[in-house]
Image (cartoon, rainbow, N blue to C red; front, side, top):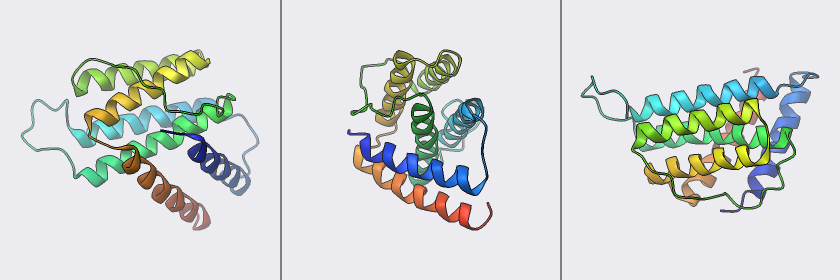
Length: 161
Protein backbone atom coordinates (compact mmCIF):
# COMPACT_ATOMS: atom_id res chain seq x y z
CA UNK A 1 0.00 0.00 0.00
CA UNK A 2 1.37 3.39 -0.98
CA UNK A 3 1.71 5.76 1.97
CA UNK A 4 2.49 9.01 0.18
CA UNK A 5 -1.12 10.27 0.03
CA UNK A 6 -1.50 9.61 3.75
CA UNK A 7 1.80 11.32 4.58
CA UNK A 8 0.70 14.38 2.60
CA UNK A 9 -2.68 14.49 4.30
CA UNK A 10 -1.09 14.04 7.72
CA UNK A 11 1.50 16.74 7.06
CA UNK A 12 -1.29 19.16 6.18
CA UNK A 13 -3.29 18.22 9.28
CA UNK A 14 -0.23 18.55 11.52
CA UNK A 15 0.49 22.02 10.10
CA UNK A 16 -3.14 23.04 10.65
CA UNK A 17 -3.08 21.80 14.26
CA UNK A 18 0.26 23.47 14.99
CA UNK A 19 -1.04 26.75 13.62
CA UNK A 20 -4.42 26.51 15.31
CA UNK A 21 -2.96 25.47 18.68
CA UNK A 22 0.11 27.75 18.39
CA UNK A 23 2.54 24.85 18.83
CA UNK A 24 6.14 26.03 18.77
CA UNK A 25 7.97 23.24 20.62
CA UNK A 26 8.99 19.80 19.43
CA UNK A 27 6.11 17.46 20.30
CA UNK A 28 7.72 14.18 19.20
CA UNK A 29 7.54 12.61 22.67
CA UNK A 30 3.93 13.75 23.16
CA UNK A 31 3.00 12.20 19.81
CA UNK A 32 4.87 9.05 20.79
CA UNK A 33 2.88 8.75 24.00
CA UNK A 34 -0.32 9.49 22.08
CA UNK A 35 0.50 6.61 19.74
CA UNK A 36 0.98 4.26 22.69
CA UNK A 37 -2.34 5.40 24.18
CA UNK A 38 -4.11 4.85 20.86
CA UNK A 39 -2.57 1.40 20.59
CA UNK A 40 -3.93 0.60 24.05
CA UNK A 41 -7.36 1.88 23.06
CA UNK A 42 -7.24 -0.34 19.98
CA UNK A 43 -6.33 -3.37 22.09
CA UNK A 44 -9.14 -2.52 24.49
CA UNK A 45 -11.70 -2.47 21.67
CA UNK A 46 -10.55 -5.86 20.38
CA UNK A 47 -10.73 -7.27 23.92
CA UNK A 48 -8.21 -9.90 22.80
CA UNK A 49 -6.46 -9.95 26.17
CA UNK A 50 -9.58 -9.96 28.36
CA UNK A 51 -9.56 -13.63 29.28
CA UNK A 52 -11.79 -12.87 32.27
CA UNK A 53 -14.65 -11.51 30.17
CA UNK A 54 -17.20 -13.20 27.93
CA UNK A 55 -18.07 -9.94 26.16
CA UNK A 56 -16.88 -9.94 22.56
CA UNK A 57 -14.96 -7.28 20.66
CA UNK A 58 -16.44 -3.92 19.70
CA UNK A 59 -18.00 -3.45 16.28
CA UNK A 60 -15.59 -3.63 13.37
CA UNK A 61 -16.12 0.08 12.55
CA UNK A 62 -15.06 1.12 16.06
CA UNK A 63 -11.96 -1.07 15.92
CA UNK A 64 -11.09 0.32 12.48
CA UNK A 65 -11.45 3.90 13.74
CA UNK A 66 -9.12 3.15 16.67
CA UNK A 67 -6.67 1.56 14.25
CA UNK A 68 -6.53 4.67 12.05
CA UNK A 69 -6.18 6.89 15.12
CA UNK A 70 -2.88 5.09 15.60
CA UNK A 71 -1.98 5.49 11.94
CA UNK A 72 -2.40 9.28 12.26
CA UNK A 73 0.26 9.36 14.98
CA UNK A 74 2.52 6.84 13.27
CA UNK A 75 2.53 9.01 10.14
CA UNK A 76 3.05 12.16 12.19
CA UNK A 77 6.05 10.69 14.01
CA UNK A 78 7.60 9.71 10.70
CA UNK A 79 7.12 13.22 9.39
CA UNK A 80 8.82 14.65 12.49
CA UNK A 81 11.89 12.48 11.85
CA UNK A 82 12.01 12.91 8.07
CA UNK A 83 10.82 9.41 7.18
CA UNK A 84 7.84 10.64 5.15
CA UNK A 85 9.68 9.51 2.03
CA UNK A 86 8.58 5.95 2.87
CA UNK A 87 6.68 4.99 -0.27
CA UNK A 88 5.14 1.64 0.58
CA UNK A 89 3.84 0.15 3.81
CA UNK A 90 6.67 -2.19 4.84
CA UNK A 91 5.60 -5.80 5.22
CA UNK A 92 7.12 -8.89 6.76
CA UNK A 93 5.65 -11.92 8.45
CA UNK A 94 5.17 -11.62 12.20
CA UNK A 95 4.03 -14.56 14.31
CA UNK A 96 1.73 -14.67 17.29
CA UNK A 97 -1.84 -14.27 18.36
CA UNK A 98 -3.46 -10.86 18.70
CA UNK A 99 -2.10 -10.34 22.22
CA UNK A 100 1.43 -11.17 21.04
CA UNK A 101 1.08 -8.73 18.15
CA UNK A 102 -0.05 -5.93 20.45
CA UNK A 103 2.89 -6.53 22.79
CA UNK A 104 5.33 -6.64 19.88
CA UNK A 105 3.82 -3.47 18.41
CA UNK A 106 4.08 -1.61 21.71
CA UNK A 107 7.71 -2.68 22.03
CA UNK A 108 8.43 -1.50 18.47
CA UNK A 109 6.79 1.88 19.08
CA UNK A 110 8.71 2.35 22.34
CA UNK A 111 11.91 1.36 20.58
CA UNK A 112 11.26 3.95 17.87
CA UNK A 113 10.48 6.69 20.40
CA UNK A 114 13.73 5.96 22.22
CA UNK A 115 15.81 5.40 19.08
CA UNK A 116 14.07 7.24 16.23
CA UNK A 117 15.80 5.64 13.27
CA UNK A 118 14.37 4.34 10.01
CA UNK A 119 14.74 0.64 10.87
CA UNK A 120 12.75 1.10 14.09
CA UNK A 121 10.13 3.16 12.26
CA UNK A 122 9.70 0.53 9.57
CA UNK A 123 9.40 -2.20 12.21
CA UNK A 124 6.51 -0.32 13.80
CA UNK A 125 4.80 -0.18 10.37
CA UNK A 126 5.42 -3.90 9.86
CA UNK A 127 3.74 -4.69 13.15
CA UNK A 128 0.81 -2.38 12.43
CA UNK A 129 0.48 -4.27 9.17
CA UNK A 130 0.42 -7.56 11.07
CA UNK A 131 -2.32 -6.15 13.30
CA UNK A 132 -4.27 -5.00 10.24
CA UNK A 133 -4.01 -8.47 8.76
CA UNK A 134 -5.09 -10.12 12.02
CA UNK A 135 -8.04 -7.72 12.18
CA UNK A 136 -8.88 -8.46 8.53
CA UNK A 137 -8.52 -4.82 7.45
CA UNK A 138 -7.74 -4.20 3.79
CA UNK A 139 -5.74 -1.29 2.43
CA UNK A 140 -9.02 0.13 1.13
CA UNK A 141 -10.57 -0.14 4.62
CA UNK A 142 -7.63 1.67 6.18
CA UNK A 143 -7.39 4.47 3.61
CA UNK A 144 -11.15 5.09 3.68
CA UNK A 145 -11.25 5.20 7.46
CA UNK A 146 -8.12 7.37 7.59
CA UNK A 147 -9.63 9.93 5.21
CA UNK A 148 -12.88 10.03 7.20
CA UNK A 149 -11.06 10.44 10.52
CA UNK A 150 -8.71 13.04 9.03
CA UNK A 151 -11.69 15.21 8.13
CA UNK A 152 -13.20 14.63 11.58
CA UNK A 153 -9.90 15.82 13.10
CA UNK A 154 -10.05 19.05 11.07
CA UNK A 155 -13.63 19.58 12.21
CA UNK A 156 -12.62 19.04 15.82
CA UNK A 157 -9.89 21.65 15.50
CA UNK A 158 -12.32 24.12 13.96
CA UNK A 159 -14.75 23.58 16.84
CA UNK A 160 -12.25 23.94 19.69
CA UNK A 161 -11.66 20.26 20.49
